[in-house]
Image 1 (cartoon, helix red, strand yellow):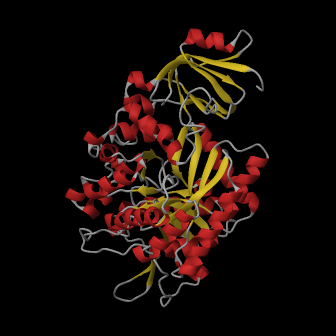
Image 2 (tube, one colour):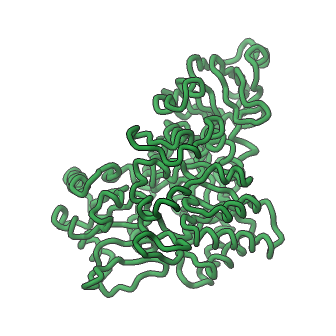
Length: 539
C-alpha cells in the first residue's frame, strides 16, 4: 500500500499513549501512523480514495511486545512431545511413548514442559524412562528449561558417567546413597552439556523452528519480541528472514553469556556481543545486549535464596557476585544493555549490586538494564530497583495459580504470599515490562493479560487466584504488555503505542474486552495482525 492511505475504524482504539489513551480511528500511510483520533477527522485525513479496514465489533490495540522470549527454542518445543498439564507420571510416560511411536525414525525422543509436581517427589529418574524407550536417547525439558530429564541411553550419548564432575553452576543429580547419576541434569549441566547437542541442527531445520514460532506470534497479535538467549546461528536465521522479507516481528536480541568459570573466556563473550551489537542495529532486527542466567528456579530449588527452602536446602547462584560484577561492568562500558535472570532474592541482590556498580564505575546512564523474572524479591530490593531505574521484566503467566502448588510449597506461605509483586514495583517507580518466557510458558498474549488483570488461571477457573489484590487494572495490564516492554527494549521510538509518526504495528481483536471485563480476554480472538504496515496474519 505504498503511498496509499488506509483508514481503520468501526471500533474503539486503545492507544497505550498516556496523552490520549482512547480514540475512534487510525489512519495509516505506507508503514506509519498518520493520524489517531476521532472518526470524523480520521475520514478527512484519509481522503476519499483511502483503503478501509472495518474493525466493527472489535477493538484496536498496539501490537503486543513480548518482553522475554526464546525464539528458536519455542519453535523447537512445538515439534516435541508436549508434557505440560500431564498431571501424573503415568500420563508423562504415555505421551513420551506415543511421541516415540509416532516418530520411529527420529534419532532421539524429545519432550518438553514437564512439571515438577507431576513427578513423584519432584525427583525425575532415568528408570521412569528406560523401560518405555530403551533403544533411543530421551531428552525431556522441564517446563522452566532449567533442567533436563534423560534416560540411560542419553547419559551414554552425553558421555556422563557416575564419576563425571558437575559443571560450574550446575549439577548432575546423583542418588545420595549410591552416587549413581539419576538422569536429572540441572542448570549448566543442561545448558552446557545438553543444549549444544540438541541445538546442533541444520540451517534448514533452524529456519523451520524460527518460522514456526514467528507464525504463532503473528496469530497471537505479537509484533515485537525480546529474545533472551540469542546464539549466533539463530541470529543468522532471523537475518535470513529479514533479508527475504519474511520477518513478521521485530526482534531485539540479548546474546546469552555462558558460565565457564574462566573470567577471560567470559569477558571474550562480552566483546563478541559488542561486535554483533555494532553489526545489527536496525528497527526490525537489533542486538542490544547480553543475558545472564544468574540462578535457577524455585520449583527446582536452584534459585538462590537468602534463607533456605522449606526442606532445608539452598543453592549458590550460577553467576556469583565475583563473576557477575566484572561482566556487567564490561558490558555497560561497551554500551550493551544487560539482562540478568534472577529469581531468588540472593541472586537479586547480586544483580542490583552489579548494575549499580557498573553505572558508578563507568559513569553511565540510560542503558535500561533489566532484571528478569524477580519471582521472590524483598521490599528493600524492590525499592532499590525503583530508585536505580532498573526494569522489572516479569511474566504474568508464571503466576498462573494452576502451576503454583510446588512453587508455594518450596517457599512456604510467608515468602510465597509476596511473590510476583507487580504493584510494588510500579509504586517504587520501576519500569515494568511484561512477557511470556516462551517456551517455559504459553506465549499467547491475551491469556497472559488475563492473568495480569485477575491473577487467576486461564485454564482452570476452580483454582483460587494468587494475591488477587495485586491484579492490575486492564488498561495498565495492556500498557505493560505494549508500551512498557517497547521502552525497555529501546523500541519506544517506533512501536508500543498508537500515535502519529509511529510504525503501523497494529492488532485488531474481535471483541472489546475493556467493555466486557477481564473474562472476555479468554474469548477474544485476533482478527488481524499488522507489522510495519504489512498484514502478517488475518483471520
